[in-house]
Image 1 (cartoon, helix red, strand yellow):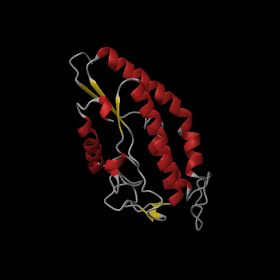
Image 2 (cartoon, rainbow, N blue to C red):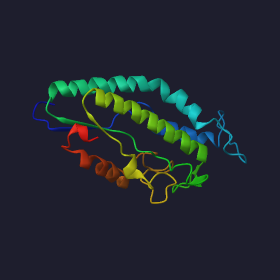
Image 3 (cartoon, rainbow, N blue to C red):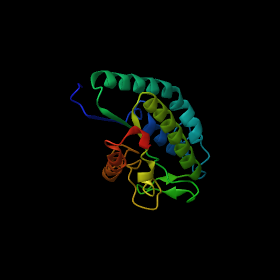
Length: 195
């Protein structure tokens, strides 16, 4: 990077937080015990997703925020005129008040409580990322509105890979990548005080 760079977009932290794998663990906990033995015929009695998030994600969040701050400061030093956009994480799960337990397009059962836990954690992660971005003079873009109706168990087509298949689980698919782009485009070259 140097002074010729005019735009930097960053989506950072999900892999470091092991976010997608945490959601996989949340799904599996509904059906399998710690010994990997099935819980059937009583799914949904496993460890709560919220507990899994607290064990896996929460201890790593401080490190992610420190890394983001260091990266933004380095960008500022090397490319001081660049517009910097930090993109948050979309809400992967349909709101729990719209539907009961559901089956997503890949055929995976997704309980209501788990969806709420994932949504709450996403909002908390985005709030922390936004605080660092704004403190360092970068714009934060919240992609959630662009994904409404296209979450796992959403009313429209799902913009995320499911648990099964060759694609990375719970990552945006091709339509989801377009959703990210549509969230970012209105913010290009807009003044920071428009937020």
